[in-house]
Structure formats: C-alpha cells, structure tokens
Amino acid sequence: MFKVAGIGEVLWDIHGDDKTLGGAPANFACHCGILGAHAYVVSCVGDDALGAAGRDFLQQHGVDCSGLLVAASLQTGRVQVTLGHGGQPEYEIKQHVAWDAISFTAELAGLAPRLDAVCFGSLSQRSDASRDAIGRFLDATRPDCLRMFDINLRQTYYSDAVILDSLKRANALKVNDEELPILAAMLGIPGTDSEQLKAIVRAHDMKLAVLTCGSKGAWIVTPDDANFAAAPPPTVLASTVGAGDSFTAAVVTGYLNGNTLEDINRHANTVASHVCTQLGAVPPLPPKTENGDER
View 1 (cartoon, one colour):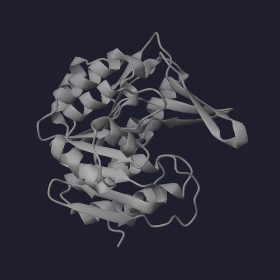
View 2: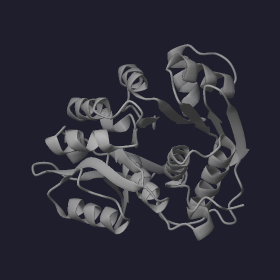
View 3: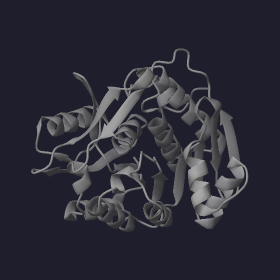
View 4: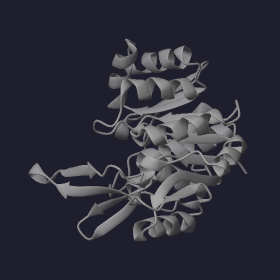
C-alpha cells in the first residue's frame, strides 16, 4: 500500500451555525484514503473543540493523524463564510491559527522518508514557521517521492518567493485554468495552455504537470507525453467543493500505480465529476470509481 500525505492547512469552513472540515491537504488525504492509499495529514490544530472534531472527522475517513500536531495556545483554523453582494459567498481566512504553527518534529522527520507521495500548496506557507517546516519536510522525503505542488492560490496569501521556492522542491504540479495565467506570467512563459505546461515541466524537471479546466476537462503533461480528457458532465450539480482535491488524489494514486496518462486522466475526471454530484468535500465513491474501473 502506497503511503501518501497532505501537508498544510486543516480548517473549518463556518457559515452561520454550519461548519464543514476543509483545507486542500485534508481533503486530499481523505480522497487518497478512499482510493486505497495509506493517507496521512500533516498539519496543526488547536487544543479546542474544533481541533478534536477535526481529528475525529479525519480518522473516521481513514486518515492517519500521527502527523497532526496540537498547538495549545492557538485556535484551530477557521474560514468565516458570509454572503456578499448578489448572494455570492465571501471568505475570511482567519490568521494566526494553529496551521500557521506547523513545526518539523522528530516524528515528522521520521515520516517524510517513508512517503511515496506528498501534496502541498501555497496557502499553508503564509507564515514563516509553517513555510520552514513544510520545506524541511519536503527536503526529508526520498528522491523518488512524488512531491505534488497543488498551487491553490488564495486571496493575497502567496508571493513570488513562495511559488518559486515551491517549484524548486516539487517534481509535480497541479494548477487550474485561473491559476495558470498567473503562474505563466510570473515565470515569463508564453504560449497555449499545453505549451506552458510543457515548458514548466522542462524548466523545473517535473515528472508531470496537471491543468484542470473545470467542466471542460484536464490536461496532464509529462516530459514525454501529453493527454487531454473531457470531463463527464455530472448528472446533478450539487457542489464543486472538494472536486479539485479529489482530482489531485486520483492523479497521484494513479501515477503511483503506474497507470497510463489516458487512464489517470479519465479516472480523475470521473472521480471529480462524481464529487460534484454530492454535498460535502469527501463523499464516498461508487465501487467502480473507487477502484479506477469506471469503463
């Protein structure tokens, strides 16, 4: 069984009296567990009710929480969701919370070399402490570990320095069609979407790069190949929350299993499309989708 970790933010989306556990690394870990990996989450929560509830939620979804630290003096991460003009949701990501204080402990130093893949993003690197811990964790992985940088640009919580340093440590990249133009401009890379992906793979010695294009589908590019797959339309669109993280998880587990780009892309699109038909970021998958045999 492959060992996979999501490192970074664990937080609760709070909308009135409703709350939902989130954070891309947490969602990624849950989906990897559903897809058959031994999944870890590496993060930090507060010594509070939300922290305990978050740990319970993750463990109930099969995630190994041995890398989930506790910061007694900080609150568990929260995102306050309110409805703004025209009913559009607005998000206030609370600062100075537990996932801003991830530390590189002896336990994490022991976990990192055992991993076959790790996924990280930019949001969790907004604090110097967590950025340092994430960098040290990535540096402690084996050379053959798949280090997936799911860029996840959020509001103003990123910088050129964080992005460029993350690209140096990563050997795989995932962006969406809103993030790619920002990244390409930052790197000075012209061309079409697929040309930009290929240039990034070459320039940063990537094993693969992924571009998700919402309902249109996705590109997966390696040094030797490229594949585009259209997304199957969801039968009913319930929510897109967690779809991108499920796509990343399906790509990572498919790559570790040695599947072809075509099979990886088709399966990842199918998984993400199913998630869009469900409420909640980590719904169960139908058996055929879970096993990657949806044909």
